[in-house]
Length: 143
Image 1: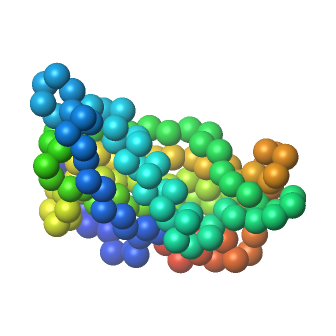
Image 2: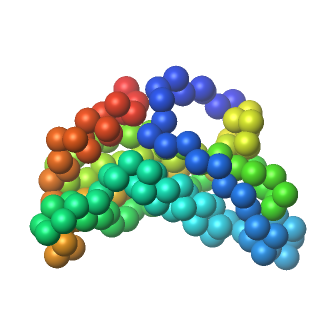
């Protein structure tokens, strides 16, 4: 399957260094680790941009509502990955991302899938996406 290049700038692009212990008994990265790599990239994005950080009843985080991943290529601990994401849908309090793990040089898609995130307030209730955050998401939305 030939991947179509995405020309829209990603919401984030984070390099991931798989660890030796992330491998399974077959010598490749265990499938559950890919979810952790993508989580690591999302958290780094939140820390770098301040997305999802608020006080009181403002937006104070996000919950994963749904997640899925398709594995395209096996990978090994001595090769770095690049995690990228694009927005595919923006709702009132939730949004959906297309997430991909690429080879470090971007030539190979290793895994891809979607995640639905719900913005929450300090009481862990859904809260509308603020205008500032909505603009950030729209800038990385796929048509």
